[in-house]
Structure formats: C-alpha cells, structure tokens
Image 1 (cartoon, rainbow, N blue to C red):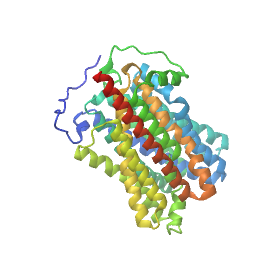
Image 2: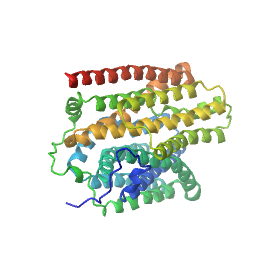
Image 3: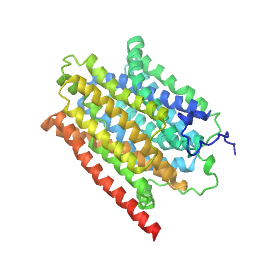
Image 4: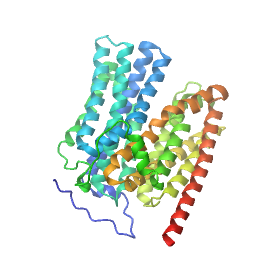
Length: 426
C-alpha cells in the first residue's frame, strides 16, 4: 500500500486559511477539477449551439437538460458503490474518457456532415453518465488526500475551482467556436481532459488509503433503499440530503435557464452585455464566497449552520426574483452565488464526515442524487409554473416554499439535537 504524505494537523484552536493547499497532491487535483468543469461547460456551449443550428428542436434542447441531470438521480448511488469497491483513480479516468469520447464524437460527426438527432441523443447521454461516474469517486479522492481535518477546506476550494471552470468554459467555448468552428472546436476541447487523466496514473491515492481494511459491500442498482435504511437514523446525513434535494427540486438550475428572460425584463433588449453580467455575477459570487470563507477561516461545519446558510441562499433567490431594477438583480445574484457555495460545500463535507466509512461512496452517491438528480424536477416547479404566472413569480414562489421547508428542517434538527442531549444525559 502506498503511503500518504504526512501533513501536520491544524491546531485545535487555530484555523488555517486555505488549509487543503498544504497537501501537495490536492493542488493538481483541484486544477484537474477546474479543467474538467471548464471542458464540460465548453462542450455545452458548442453542442447546444450545434443542436439549435442543425435541428431547431425545442424537445431536443429539453432532452439535453434531462439527459444531463436524470442519470444523477438514477445512477449516483450505484456510482458511489463503484467508488466504495474500486480504485477511484480509475473511475475518474473512465469519466474523463467518456467526456473526451463525447467531444470527439460530436466533432467527427459534424466534420463529416453525418450528425443526426439520434446521434445527438446518444452523445448527450454519454456526457451525462460521465459526470455521474466521476462524482462520488472524486469526493472520496478528496477525503483520502486531505483527511478529516481539512475536508471542509478541500471541498470548498474544489467547488470554487469548479466555479471558475464554469466561468471560463463558456468563454473558451465561444473562442473555439469562432476560431475553429464547432467540429474542430469540440475535438480540441477533448484535449482539456488529458493532463488530469495522466496525473491520475501517477498519484498514489486511491480513495481508500485512509480506510484500508474496511469491508466493502457488493454492488447493486437497487442500493438506494439499503443506503437510506442505513443512514435513516443519522440526522446529519439525512438533514443535508433533504436540504440539497429540496433546493434542487424547487429551484435547481432555474436561475441560469431563465436568465435570458430575466435580462430582457430588466431592460436588456438584445440579451447581450447585461445578460452576460448577470451570469458572471452568479458564478462570481460563488468564487468570491469560496475564497473569502477560506481566507477568513470561519463557519465551523454543523448541520444547523449549513441549513441557516441555505436559508440565506433562499432569501437571495427571492430577492433576485423580485428585483425591480438591474443593479438590485446583479447584487442579489452575487448574494445567491456566495451562499450557494457556502451551504453546498459545507453540506458535502458534513455528509462525508458523518457517513459510515464502509459505505461512504454510496452515501456520497445518495447526496449527489439529491443535489443534482433532483434538478430534473425543477423544470416543472419553475418552468411549467413560469409559463402560467411568469418566471419572476414562479422563481419567487419556489424560493418562498423552499424557505418555509427549511424552517421546518431547522425545527427538526433542533429537536433531534435536544433529544440527543436528553438521551446522553439520562
């Protein structure tokens, strides 16, 4: 078994800013996450343009969204089971290979003039599965590299790097589209994944070095029920799964999807500069939040803190939905991005810390199914409702309902903590 590099633990009463960066292997790992998210978003920009130009098909555009998120709902726990059982480096490499396959296949079909609708459907499904396979394995790798003490720092920095990738990806996609056209641009995008894949062949971490010798259960596509049963009494895991699942279902990616209409309503007739600024404010708020929270070294991870942060995020969503003028909307989106990364990264870290070690991958998969898979339903809660009452009202109502649900969840967590205190004192 390979040995992990020793890292001095943070002092109990002294929080180290950017603590995860003290681990040499985490730095290239974080850059690999950035490159993956950048490539992912680069492909989205070019492939969605191709779908519109080639087919002018609203249903195919809808399928593109469903194919991206639905696999997380169905297969995340199974992907977690794979991460529990096998070398996580190989699973991440398999994910990278699927991303590359999708980009190269898009490019080859476009260049040969043979792209058809069914091709697009298959490639979009491959792209969606790539994200699912790499997700839980990636989180176990982070845990293995930095350990428990610096896990929140690592999750937050990793999330921040991925947010930067989301900012850079569309710009790179647009540049490749202009410079090389969609076919060569997509093939060139496949090269983005190569350095991280090669690095994974050299790094000693497998996702299991710190938990070597623990029993690992068999695989099964119906593991979700067993995992839920195993963690049903774990208030930390269940409360975090519930809060991210509700957020995904009721709001999800609705802000980004409906952003063009919000930009138009706020006076951007051409949906140009102001639209881009709104998108940048949302992602930029997340990046700023991750960096500031790391630098300040505040917010000790706890279920109550994560839920309260999610409540602030909801307030930001409602403020954005109700914003009467553009500057207010811009500030609200910075607020939304800030608290999204604050509660999301803390929830992820708490789940990994509280999960039983022998099924940690499955529990992380359950969290991913809630955080990402439930976004499949947000098209109904915000999209369909928006067609009836308008996107401002639909987003505001969804955010308000979510805020009410979070208040109920706060009462649940407080009651559970009070019950645990009484039991321990008995």
